[in-house]
Image (cartoon, rainbow, N blue to C red):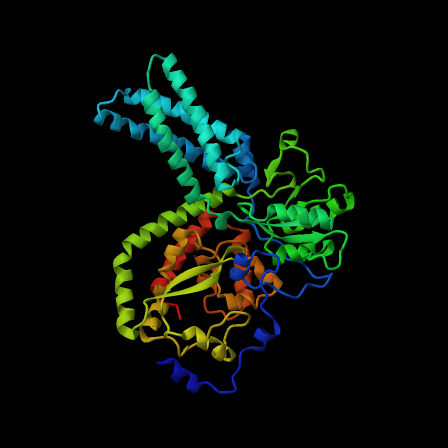
Length: 521
């Protein structure tokens, strides 16, 4: 059915929902132009003083297992974000060892003098140990600019190679040429792994600075453009009219929810009442708190704290997350999604061909969806509607059967013949496996919603964006046809708060049964 034909069956007086016009879409005013262009609209109306500010939703840490891990693992691996450190150390160790072992056969092929495999492996393990220790001491497992990181890695590999060559010589082996050649290979592998594994958008932490206006603005200027941190703006204390602040200290809980804040940086540590209030709000909203002293001339060597943009940050509070479980969930996502994409590739090709034969136009439908922390990503689906269907959405919104900001109608006139079949068995969702591989989505989690639906969220609805969206979730297996958005929210919140890896596996198995029964619409 053509777009014009559908327009004719709709009343000419039918207009867009009043909710769309009553809530203006305003991008984040304090973000850079690039971030502002791609930002998801945020909730505009501030809550009243007596309203509840909904905290950041985080999976709960099992303190029993945390105690066991603390007793068995190095302390640096069990503190918040220690899993990233362990992952970085393990990756560097394996890459350096692999580089030395891989370079050795080429020496034999070229007729150059080399050492036995067992000796080369021993030297590789020794060099990897020295290199990872030096990387830790140089802070290379923390966010850096590309230039600082490359320069630090080069220094680490030069020192570790020199020490390993000296050790090999004392043991009666001349492995200088082999280790020097592997230095270049190791450096390329380590730098390449960091570029692939540590994309800025995936690990970006939203930051708000709290403090006296001039100090807070100075800290904010230093933070702009820093890797792994997205400066959202500052909260002025005391209030300063016309300062460009996001709000006052009494709005901090609301601001943290609206901006998806991960971390508060306190720039006025001399005010005990302000520190106490910030810590109270941070504990209530599950936020990390760091402090930067007023004395900017203090060096990081004197403090022994995290340094960002040349400023020493003192950590006052930090959330403990089940990082090992989160990493295991990501590994499961990559493994299962890759296997499914390979196994189902013939089916994907047949579906694409059927769509082309049925209605022409592209086989895939690409559209922006709200991901974790409201960041947009390009979601892939098989096209089940006529071309240009998005232009008709607002004209059809008056017939919406869902209660809340989401849109769904039975017998949608935009759906094609093959589209109804694909939706019945959820086959249109299969291309989202690629989004899972990319890290935009997870196999299990809250469903991703269109940006125009997200613009209609209330403040408490933003909690579902605290985690990556999923291909399936509790709503799909327990309340798939329930029109209530509040019920959807209840299930999403329940999933996030009580998340376990075993629970994800159970949801995946139950989803397979739902798909086979063809309960989709």
